[in-house]
Length: 367
Image (tube, rainbow, N blue to C red; front, side, top):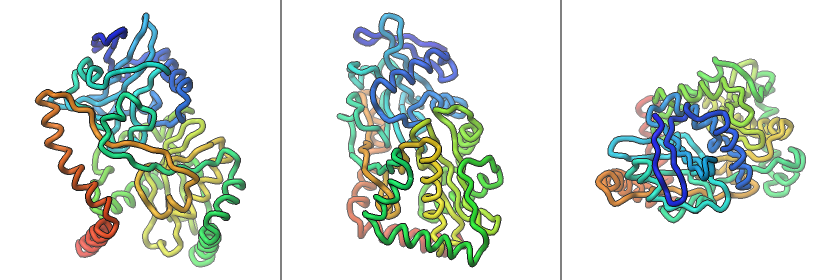
């Protein structure tokens, strides 16, 4: 279904992700490396190809100069030309992959792609084409473990003296009171993955968020990435067991050097032992030994992220909107709700009250 169009000085081919050739994928990764940006697996062609297998509107605009690719823009197209970042809702790093020095006008790019708007919620920093269209800048904490886990642990002890000590004490208590603690960093355990999805679904409902695993395409996407053997983009299932029962688990996405913290959850029956934190420390140690240099915790504030992080990246939320009917429809459908969320998020006391109300409603419903 190749479509061709023109930008000033560039030829643009619009392809389905499965139409990307091996050379296209190779060039995509080479351009990404040239840019100096982190090797985040969400901006790898492997993620776009996987999304293309579960989302029929997935497309890639391939920018060519003299017949050679100089950029890739993955997106999803919907009704009225309303576009969104590839995998929006589960993707933690978004944008275009462009050879250094390439400059584009965002609205012209959308026009040649047949889009009236393009929505993003985790646009990476440095995306000069799209950052001017951001409505909000967010912190995305990361953990640097490139110097090894021991170096990181020393830094953690200096920053939060009681955090590491208390978490390790809870791990010992878990072993004494529940059973031998065992950790699997990268396991193929379909039962544990189903359990993780069940815990996560309950957490989404309990906190009033949309249940991602109630959406078939997300469940299928996780399955595809979990089965991938691509070193630049594959799923990693980590499980913490106590007495041979899973008490916490995490499904993440990794490249050779970056692991994205994606779907963590734990069994609330063991909440007093902080099994999620125990798992996370074990996972950081194993990931460092496996060559991971950075663990991206994803945007959004949480106390455990503040305790564990070594620094923050910047990501952006917003939309490019063209002055056409589909663009107006996007604005009317999204921007008022975005403004309301921002109003609550910027007022911690209000946000806390809302979270407590949702917890109480879930308890009353038996959630």
